[in-house]
Image (cartoon, rainbow, N blue to C red):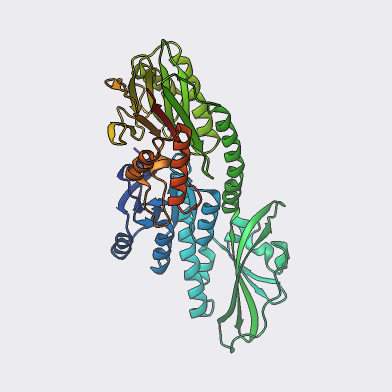
Length: 508
């Protein structure tokens, strides 16, 4: 059995299940994580003071805490720890802003395939930054006598005169640019990258070795084979032996720039996914004597895999379904389309909601990977019998309210999400009797988990309150009232998850 690399991991996460999932992915990537989970500012400060951590992984959505506060606390601690965001769904603008503010990478909880490589890269770069700091300290304190540190740095280090001619290059120059150090000695800096801005004037008082000015910039570098790479240059100006010199520390940031480009490309994928979803939702709700139906889905910026449908079923039943596919983008949208197709086909030939979920689960388990699953609630409305029968595959609870707006029944989970275990078994519950004035709500988690700027959740109580206050209105207006109430609660901040709801009203 291969030996795993020990990893001291600080997890800012309110879900123990998600923490275990992250730890499991890291074990599969060759690490042996020893982790501590915190979910408050005090817990984070205490953990940073008490532990010697290698890495911080932070969820974006926390009930009592925010990712921005976590980054500020880490920066105040002066600890240089890689900070990786792992979230269920935030927009690209938020992700890019977070990376500019100091986060090192961003991954979706529904797609953790990049977690292992991202951790490996960020740990390596953290070690390189530490080495970089040690090199600069050695340069200031020992008049360049710690040349050995330069030679072991993974950053390319160049010592140049003010005309831009190279006088020293460390071995990392060959790793980054393909030139042996002796090949660049005496050559101009333009051999490796475009001309730098003119050095600042007005040096500090002369001393043996003392940096006076420092700048950081990104540009393109040119390798010996002619290939172009993205580089980051930290440049210090100094006086040494009564001459003015420049020292450049050069890092290859091609991979980081590629990650930023992927974030931008993902935005286009989300747009395509949104179009796919829009075409699959019902154009109109069915019309049934004695009943009124409505459904709607309001996608977030980061398009997910929410789904709702009205399914003609074998016999006299009508299927009401609401579901959510993990992750965001093209993949979840296609999985949602596949799930919809299976349910529509199965519902035409059988009327047992448990049996339908059993068969759909076996098919989906063959098609999806370990990081994908579908939560789904399927209910059968029997109009002649005035009953509602349901089965729930790991989906948030639905509600049945009576004519006074009180909770008559909660439609809780009856099994695990679809696609995880092909042997999972789903059984339909006891039929619920429907009376005039009853109101059934089927929701995705984006409804109750709508978040205020103060990081409070919209929650079950507010959902029921809005439904109760609007129960006399048409079903479509109740759906709209729920959405508007959640948006007002969030102060119209960018929507973090899709909002999907189906309403059933019993008229007579």
